[in-house]
Image (cartoon, rainbow, N blue to C red):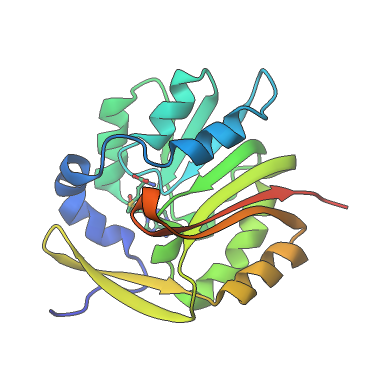
Length: 203
Ligand SMILES: C[S@@+](CC[C@H](N)C(=O)[O-])C[C@H]1O[C@@H](n2cnc3c(N)ncnc32)[C@H](O)[C@@H]1O
């Protein structure tokens, strides 16, 4: 199958947005991770969903827990779907690499979105995450485990994914003042996702 967009994978989601919205597993298999974070949040808290897609189910889960949720996504189509789902939520069309919101959140989630960035763009994202997190804020994201790229058919499009090695992620997290709370490789409850949960502990 022909390989497509590598640099701005969000553009492909403009074509497959409806397919994605219909086919993404609806029951929140990520719930255990989300709950582990939510139960540690202060009574008034905020979350930023990076690459929020149509907002279901992750953004929605935070909204239903009365947590102020903000979403960004690079795809016009995905933001349109998210706005239809959550008209009262702040949702922005934005490439995560350009994110400079000038505000800090208690939680940042980049579930199955960060891994669409080319490997050379991933290290700088930890600084971007840091700039948008309060001290003791949580970062939850998924990645691969080995340096390289992978392609996968989704909605008739061959989608690009890239990864650094696990040890590289560990070092990046550490050098950006994150403490790793959990690193689950190949979580069978989440379709084999490799999940990182970390806490921002600035010095
Ligand atoms: C597999 S979907 C995941 C959506 C959502 N996080 C979820 O769990 O359902 C990946 C999303 O990441 C977005 N995305 C990919 N690259 C991006 C980038 N550079 N900046 C912002 N969003 C991006 C895509 O447009 C798409 O909505």
